[in-house]
Image (cartoon, rainbow, N blue to C red; front, side, top):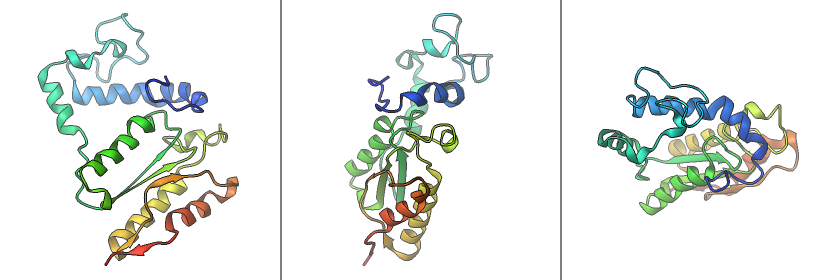
Length: 196
């Protein structure tokens, strides 16, 4: 799991995400991109063990799929060539789309295309893909929704008033549970600069 990009410290979250989000997301996306793989089984067979039936998700080999599937994936793939201001946030404990294989890669793509001045990427320490786990596992998870609201406000200020958000960075965990939103507001809006 670590070799696939899952961060240390996220182990308690793996089973929940697989059973409640990961497997279904995999089937839904593959149904759109490669509908012939499972033929008559729309969105596949949940939790299909490897080698047990034709079209099992665990037997899927992308490299062996037809050229038209590869073309669809290429057309859907990110390039980093953004044309408008963009603020990205991702939790460091995201185990649906591990941060080292998604957000970090996207941020590098944007930087490599020299559009970094239009992009801010905030890595949210302790955040996961959704807030559904916060009530059940307040350690190590931190809620993302306050961060998302703050980022939306910052993007509105950036595009509407020219208030440039601070540089991309990892936002540390707040010192107390009830101070999440206030702490993030201070971190994101610290020392704003206006565009000339």
